[in-house]
Length: 81
Image (cartoon, rainbow, N blue to C red; front, side, top):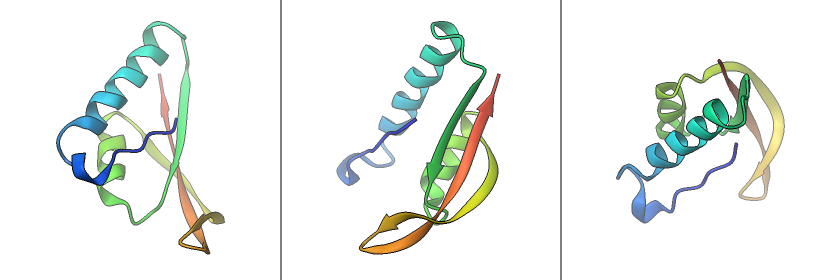
């Protein structure tokens, strides 16, 4: 899964609306058993949103992303149905 919410619309329900649509599509139309995503570990707003939709933390991937020109860790999260 990949979603991005513009900062001007952060904390206004846009992320929840997107996640609700993604989870509905995965569960009711695509018959997916597992959804997974990666998020920067310091993005507490996004992590809280994902946990609200049943995602759990699976592991930390060291130096798996690039952020502001330097390597950064990524948190792997998944949701099982």
